[in-house]
Image (cartoon, rainbow, N blue to C red; front, side, top):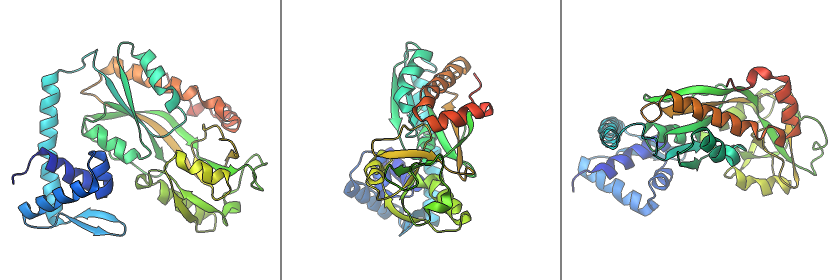
Amino acid sequence: MDLDLRHLRLVCAIAETGSLTRAAARLELSQPAATHQLRQIEELLGGELFARSRTGTRPTPLGHQVVARARIVLHEVDALVHDLRGRHAPSAALRLGCNHLACVASVVERVGEALPGRAVSLWIEPSTALLADALAHGELDAALLGVIEGTEIALRSPVVTRTLIPRHPIFVALSAAHPLAGGAAVRLADLARERWISPPGGDDGSLAALRASCRAAGFEPDIRYDAPSGAGRPLVAAGHGVRLVDPTWPAPEGTVVLPLVGEPQVARLTVAWRRDRLGPADAAALYRGFAAAFADHVDDNPAFRKWWDAHPESHPVV
């Protein structure tokens, strides 16, 4: 057997996601098929490429060498394909990514209005790290990325960025029957005895940020559940747990979404795009589209509207 591009993509995907399962999902492979391919690659190269543990999958010294060289090969191949297809084709579909934010409901429409004639596709993904990786490998043209303050997401050329919302607070979702649900805000310390739903995209630093915020408030969070962004809503409504959320989310039935006293966690929103896919004029239009999409949902949560009106410095510059 010889190495081919699908093998190189698998090796890089495992290294970047830290998980064979997530790599298989990204490449639309079954886990048995991905496992079989990895074993074939390791047999061909004469050693293990990844060390597996309870905390994830990490490259071995041999794996680091293979991943580094595979990225060079894949970058050149992707660049070749893109160059042959032609740059900035006005009729090409625009492949967008976005974290699971309330504004995804408006992104396709608003970006479509800002860039008429461009078909828009959208990948909604909780993990900012995976969206950034998809941008780097040319699987996306642009994305709206949420980043928790104090963490960074690596973005490599030709990806460039522009801040959309420099700072906004993270809110908490509680059952409407919770004793604290009737207040205007919630102290994080008052949630010390709660069961928590892990924030989505934990590989971005959001899980570490939750633990750090809770420790600063004097307790260790009991993180009992791991659920995709929308899947945790029934747990919250039933009173089984609480979770941190985007402040623009309207409270689902049976829940309330409230600010945290002192803003123990804040985030920023960044527009990122590949400058080899979007020229300056299209990038500016894309930014305006994302800004309009976010603005569409400021009123979905009255508590956030109050914060928004009091912080004009956080509004997009358009």
